[in-house]
Image (cartoon, rainbow, N blue to C red; front, side, top):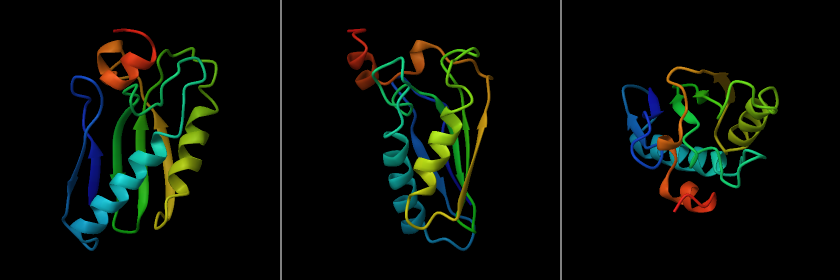
Length: 128
């Protein structure tokens, strides 16, 4: 069972869900909505936009036991908070009611670029 934040489309990431097991679709939808809201509370300290709108979240999977696995990237491999940001993400998502646990993996493929940012993030950083 998964709710994937698909590869970002123009201006951000989109969440899609698929139901193949124990969790009903309504619960997956609720968890997905609340996970996205939690991700939007985490900000890159160097950019005035949240990591979700920046397009840093590549994948979110929710298993039947309510464990969440997240693949995310950084704006640059040498990001000064590379060691801390996954912990911020883990803490934010783990606080969602009904989540059993969260693991966060940093990936660099595909590399992040500004085209992954939502219009909201572009506005926040003055790209319009």
